[in-house]
Image (cartoon, rainbow, N blue to C red; front, side, top):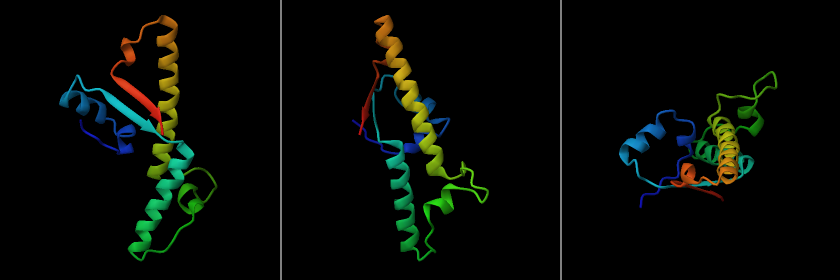
Length: 115
């Protein structure tokens, strides 16, 4: 068993192909957190590290919003937030389709847990 906790697999386009090439029969367990809680946790961790490096503290709004008030999609935590939301929608749709068709082979290699 191998454990990896990086959320960057959600936003790294080459990750699924690399995992498949490593072991095409691998079973995956994906534990997802509430995306908003995860976003705020990411921010808190980044700011704690910045504090250790004696860098000027920033507010969440400083990093999550642009000067015109729109969302800063370049902020990595925001990218992960939106990809996790997309993934959760995709999982729900896939599971609903599988249940409707009584065909579970599409999802038999992956297990999704809300953590």
